Amino acid sequence: MDKIKKLKSEGMSEDDEKFWSEEVQNLTNDFIKQIDEILKIKQDDILKV
Figure 1 (cartoon, rainbow, N blue to C red):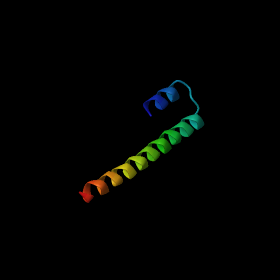
Figure 2: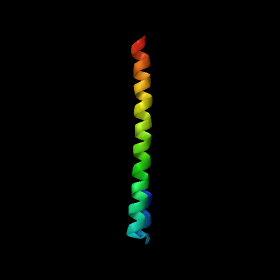
Figure 3: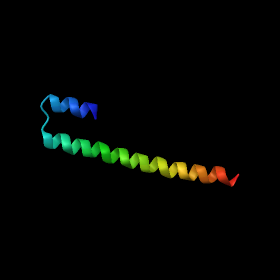
């Protein structure tokens, strides 16, 4: 996000800033979802013992 803000200050359009900010947020959300799924599997595995 800092890189996007830097590019914005260097002349990147607001549309591009919004697009890339949303892309970064979507990727972040996807990775958080994957981590949550892995964590749930691990917790279930630990509780079986």
